[in-house]
Image (cartoon, rainbow, N blue to C red; front, side, top):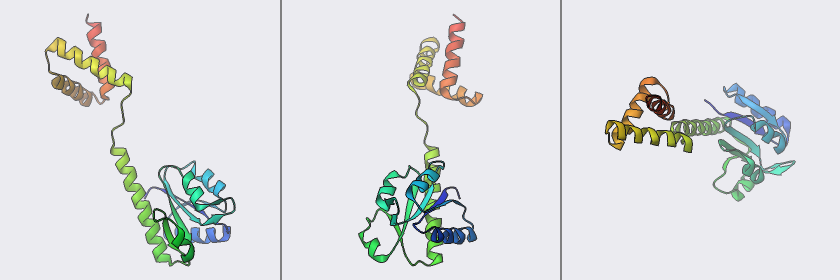
Length: 184
């Protein structure tokens, strides 16, 4: 499972105990902290993951910390039943004292969700820059004028050449334009 785990609790001993439980169940813990600032600095070097934290750290409350989390990070708040009643439903919570099985299942579920979201984001095609789009448009126009192709046929031709050569479409379009201008 991808995704890192950072634990931030006011008492460092509690955070270390939770780390021990997680490690015993096969999870890797990236950092154990007792302040929000240390947690945020630990998270800044990571791509995605889960922050397991308490309601109030010495330098910040959970809701302020949540606003500072980068995209790709989820928060799991460990708190008493009284505190959890006041927490918005959009925050993932676990009631203290907790059962190890519930804790492991929750952490596993959140990490799987983060991994699924990461795979989904990777499948999205990257947006082309204006320059790349311009190469493709000019190559299409050239093919349409020179070879009497429709716009769709010209696009498909560039796409096929791109796939055959293993280069992206913008680079293929640029090569076609260079071949055309060298032939003039």
